[in-house]
Length: 64
Image 1: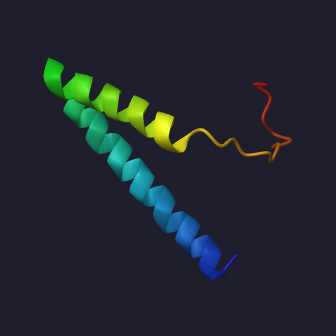
Image 2 (image 1 turned 90 degrees about the horizontal axis):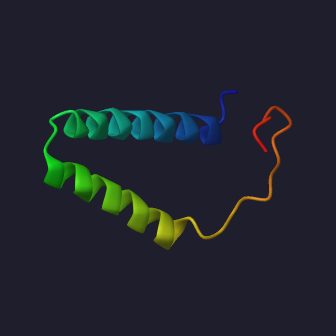
């Protein structure tokens, strides 16, 4: 539990949650252009970096 990899994953999780909340606050301004830029950025990010799927199957995941 006290390995560097666990600390790194914890830090990256905190960064991801922080960015998610900041993006939610941007969307809550109801500025159409900012909302469109977030949606297009998310789509472009998925297109560029989401093409490789993980092969790991989680036994606790029941949505498949």
